[in-house]
Amino acid sequence: MAAFGISIVGNSQFAREGATIYTGGLVSHDGSDVSFTYYAFLKPSDRVTFSAATNSTSATCILKLVRITSGQVALNQDLNGQLFLIFSSPARGGYLINATIHPSSNQTQAINDTITVVSGKPNDGLLLGIVFTFVGLLAAVVCLAMNRFRRLTSLPSTTAESGSAARDTGKSQNKFIVLLRAELFSSGRIFFVVPIFFAIAYSAGAFDARFLSAPQNISRPNLADLFAPSLTPYSDWLNIFPVVVALTAYSFAYEREARILRSLLLNPIRLRSVFLAKFTALCIIVETPIVVGITVASTMFDPQLALSEPASVYGNLLAWLFVYLLYGLVMIGLALLPSVLFRKPMYSFVVPVFIVLIISTEGFGLDNSLPWNVWLVNGIGVLSSLNFQTGFDFGGFIMSALPSSLLALMLSLLAFVVFQIQSKE
Image (tube, rainbow, N blue to C red; front, side, top):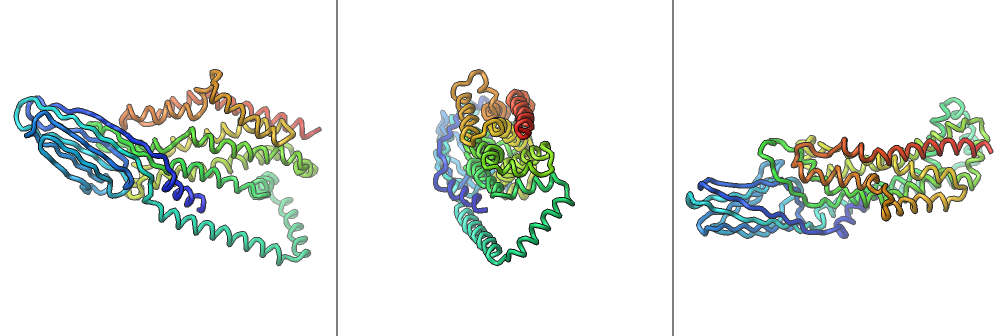
């Protein structure tokens, strides 16, 4: 909760800003009305400039801004000959922006229009972020205090009895479950979810302005496409991958160097069970905050629309979640083998980070297979041209990401073999 609140506060103060410009033109040849409509995502902090001019001073320009969720008209302005407005949306969410020209005669008349959006910091959630931050930090302090109090008040005999009970429980339960529980909750490993969740929530929570031309043959478009620019896979990868590498190095190389792994293997436990428990724990710790982060961010994209028409907000959620989950698996696959192979945690961290950095900067023919580049080609880029027709090119993404996915799978299998060999030494 604290990480979520801090991400909202951070976006309100330090989010990226930029200008989005759209230009177009309309022509009436027979005196009939002509218009265009854009679907748009806007925040109260966005400043929208609309200018339109016709070749006739008697023609009428009309601009309307309508909230999609309620149908409420937020702006309705008209002027003869030309129109210039600077306005802000009253609330965060999806809007329809419609510009119409009413010709003054049957002669050919034209209108040229320009829309400029200066995307501001999403400060409409600042108070909510402060509340979440305060409550989350307070809950963390209370939990730490209660945990310390329990340790201080527990007697040695009680501790011994608890350890004996834990051993008895381990004997009666499935060993894999016991190992998995230890991997998740021992040594504070579960807290790695915090920086991963923060990276996703902070990146996706900037909510860039987005305009898409409204197709005439689509009556209920998938408004989730407006959320696509808020997902920034390149930044997410750079922020999350070092955390995944550090977590993987901690789970294997560090435990080997500290002889924690050796002590564990002295018990009658299969090597396969130990490796699978560690791998499963890695997947849970990495993937869970990704799923929660993207789901929460897409909900905050337009909370009213999420409640009234969830299909419009979550229309692409399954595809996006699959894509980002694949990101996580590729990250784990690239980090796993060095963590098993090298006996020093420093090498286990430096090597995979350096290799991915070299590929992302130099290419070597592999850069187009990296997940963030695949997303840019088959995700955000394709949405702007399809105009809600088919949305995310899921098949194209899978085919383009196949090389990196297969590489991660092979490296994971090789890590499993190396782990078996080294652990028997």
